[in-house]
Image 1 (spheres, one colour):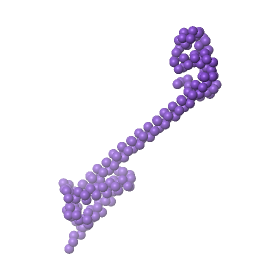
Image 2 (cartoon, one colour):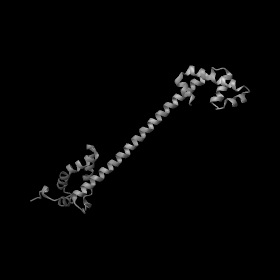
Image 3 (tube, rainbow, N blue to C red):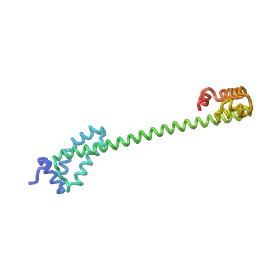
Image 4 (tube, rainbow, N blue to C red):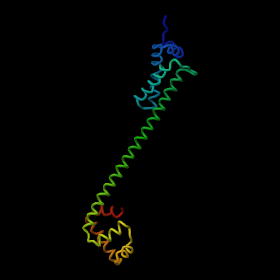
Length: 192
């Protein structure tokens, strides 16, 4: 009379699995799949990942059936195998999450940099256009002040004019830009 598989011990089932007994394998699978799934789900909080972890354990069990040797009980082996799969999944998910966060941060900073650069370039184009419309001496003084960062004294010495004249030209250029650019863009320009 054939053995009643649900009455067999885990070790007896493993012995039969080693002889390619599919029914013994199915019995072991049904005996442990529910509790192993619950164990995996509690840790992963994802049904598909929990199901995959348990499935991988039993697939490995079948594929390595010829070399199965248990030092402790079969249930301990199955729980340890599922725990290891869960830890691998959690580790992989953490790496994936870190990568996605890093990518998102990069995109945001790149987008912010690009927006800032675009606004700066647009503002600079407006300033350049307005500077072309300034009187020549005012444009020259203002360029030396803002583009070359020379002091009023240095500009006066370089151009052979008084410091007061330099101050008046810079003040006049800033007044023109303030009117043309509007206050918000003007303040932005001052801090470039």
